[in-house]
Image (cartoon, rainbow, N blue to C red; front, top):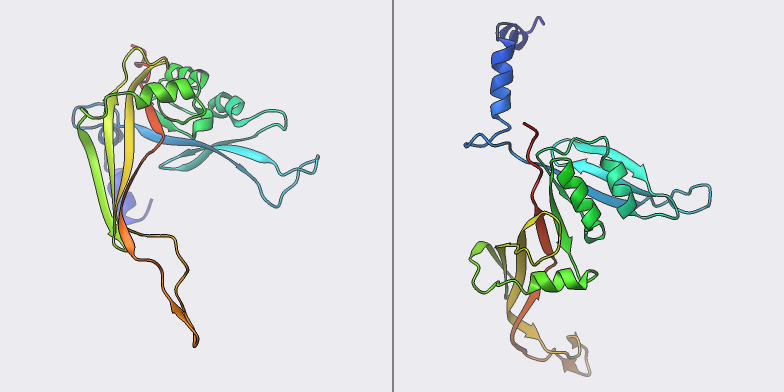
Length: 231
C-alpha cells in the first residue's frame, strides 16, 4: 500500500486494531449492541413465472448492510413458511428480527430464540386472544417512555410509547415486553358539507369547524428475549 493511509495502517498492530473495532459493537457496559434485520415480502410487478403469475419474493434486510437473503415463495405456500428457510444462512446472534404481523407466530418466535436472536413482532386482530391479552395490560399505570408531538393545519398529533412487562399469563414463547403505541389527535375538524365554491350565481362554503379529539391504538409489538450465548 503506497498511499499515506496505507503506510499508517501498515504500522498498526492487527490485534490492537481488532480489539478496538470490537469495542464499537458493544455498549458502555460491555454488552453486545443488537443489530437490526427485517423480513418482508413483495410481489414483483411486471414479471411473470412459468404459470403466468407475478413471482412473490421474501427478503431478509440488515439495517446496516442491505439484503442478505432472498427466497421465492412457492405458489402453494406463504411467507410464514419461508421464514426459517430464508434465515437459515443468516447470523442471528445478538440480532433483533422485525417483520409484519403475518410472520408473528409461535414457530417463528421459537426459531429466532433458538438462533440466539431477539424478535419484535407486531400483534393485530388476526390473533384475537393474544391481541386481547396485550390490550388488557395495565397501560394506565405504565410510564410513558417516549412522546412525540407535531402540529399541522391546526391539528395537534401526539404519539406516546409505553413499555410494559409481559406476564406469564400471555401465552407466547419468550415474550418479555410489549410496546403500547397510541396516537391522539386534538384540534378542529370540519363538519360534513359542500366543498367551497364560487360562481356568479351563488357562493357556498364548508360548514364551520368543531373541536375534535380522537385516539387510535396501534398494533402491539412483542419483544422476545434471545437465547444466551453458549459458554
